[in-house]
Image (cartoon, rainbow, N blue to C red):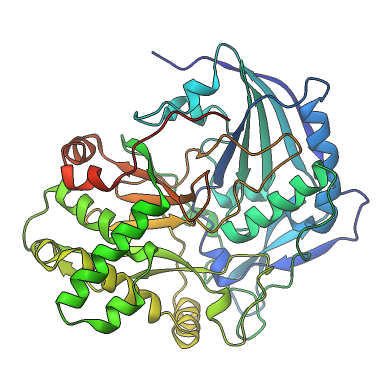
Length: 450
């Protein structure tokens, strides 16, 4: 059955208030590599705001104020020819504007959006986000940020569509929280963004092509099933202790001392997904993860750096049979070694390698035999209060979806809990459904009151 239709009531362009002088900000290698990836699409589900509040008007007014500080969000991309050949992309900060879409989902309730112990209702969620097929290169003519305010029978869903070449998730959630702070009339809770882009030599990222539009791909998303899995703080502590005990038993005291909850959860997902895929014994697999470079550079980039500062790290390759035989602790330690190896020297070497041979990431770079850990439970999703309380749930839209991707969200109850958005092909998810070891580690959903 198709999802209920979402009716768009209005659209408006929101510009920085007051206006700012025009400025251009060249993209870095980290930014430019994202040009063929999807826009970030994250959303927050709320119970009804006060009945006296016109939500779209209120959010638009606060957004205009936020865009004065975060003015690149209101810009557009432009491509210029480099004097030495090739081209480079910049943000043209001329106050072109972000967009607020006001919509209504007739007959849809909060319970329809977050059904417990069931697949994510992907078609329904996708209708809450504008620009379903946009990639970041489209920021040459599309807004870099759009929010769709969708009224439900008993709630409101805010669907944020945000250009990933503009910044990474750290800066994205900083922007949303700054906007939310303005909307609820609170004093600023964080320092302003650092808008100057970082490169080792201070030069823009040059792409050795006269026309990069020909490199942009918009591949079809394969059929996927999607689950939101909850891991309580207690569950994660148990996974960490299990990894630690296995490493101590194997004599790896260094690995046992360094193991984290993230490593333990990554190990669980890596091994469980590998089992579900029924890979041949000799097939190699790795666990990849998006990692923040800010605190690893020397000197460090400021926490408020506004741009992309992420890399994808990877464990050593291991045969599927060995991943199963070596156990949970070994897999957790392998993730830990990959994280520890991502030093200032390694980051700078990657930047230089990209400059020597630039690439633009597409979903074809995903390895169907490996897994990818994305997003972060450190993002302050549930602190994003627009003045009517804490969100009921955080969800994503149609963005960079591939088999074996796990996006980590903070759990709503906090205390170190994590929600994992897991994507698998229908046949692989069916196998995972039968994995008793995996489901024993997932915290059962409880009926919640908000």
